Image 1 (cartoon, rainbow, N blue to C red):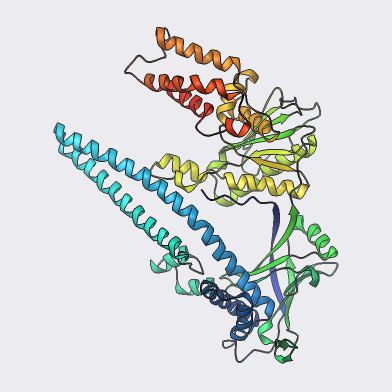
Image 2 (tube, rainbow, N blue to C red; image 1 turned 30 degrees about the vertical axis):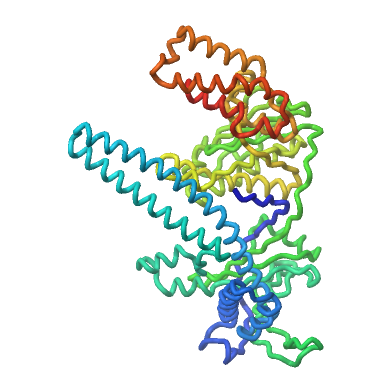
Length: 562
């Protein structure tokens, strides 16, 4: 699988709205269309330059040539032309990275689909041989037909992706949105919406030497924020410099009031006072409103110090489990003055957020609506959870340890129940929200691989501390972040010995007899564990956490018995 890029830098985006008040009266006869507003013209030219730059990048054209030709063809200044190239370069890079991931996920889906097709064909042959009822046989034939179509569709997709990889190309990119284009093709959206989506934005990156952002400039006049957007296509060439580059007259600006949310105004004022760079993007909606996205680079992530321990976090579809871990890797009771810093009412109904506290420093915050709420509601709930977690870490004065779980798309197949759960599980948003909030508040954090954490918590700590398996998994996450190894204890060996003895004597009525249930699987797991248990405690952490080692077989054993 392609290695995921670790985020060592985080940024924060503030969303506001721009209300233009002062606009140039002059219209360019060359670039404008009729009585089109100059700001709308600038957006249309910038988006056209983006699409043109993308095609030039596919042809291998250099940055300097794209920048020079972009100014000439679209009337933009050098910074706008370079920003258009930069945006399309990011699109191209992301498509190349996603191509490898998409190939791997398609191969896994195809393998699953072929297995299901084989099982369905065997059932059909068996039913025909036994002479089952016609309706049953017909139903099985429909299942075989559907799964055969699924295999054919995945095979076709895999061939297309592999051809792109061999040729060094990428799948076709649809500027304006593939979903919107499909809606237009089906008659569910108008062509006006499609055209508006392809000419509705203007982007400008920040520059520290220019005091922030020269093309989309934010200012504060003591009472309100102001925004000035450069209209470069109206400026005219006044000559050339020593390198032959055109000299342009000063571009006029569209100025107006900028509305920002109250909670971010102090941060933006501080950022402007220090004259730090920020990225600005202007988006025009179908109703004619101008949405502004200001992105501020928050810098790198602080290295965590586990001298006092850490606050371990286990993420679940319905909430988060927390564990207060001390420096020796053991759970530490909550301080006497500790209170959960969360709103009493999250805005919908009483009891929407359920906080369950356990002894010895364990805590579970359950939000049942998290897995079923709509997008905006879910984002709000995730933000509240992230704030609670970071505030607890600030109160304890400890870094945060959290899992780096991967819910890849290859796990989605034909199991509707699992697909709904996995798709609704907003893990990436929860982890990112916690990381961003921690970065803003200056709290260090460390994501670690989540392999076998729940399984280890089940076998080692669930009964010892009388907590749910998710709280036990949080303790394992904290210990792993601090570098502790998880040894196989005598208690686990005794449980395995008891299971083996019960299988031999058949004294436990819950254990199925030979030929019933999962007895053969249990015995196979026990045979594999006999040799692995002797080696486990002497291995390094990386080898202990290997996928097909002790904890994997213990998980299989649990699933076979219960």
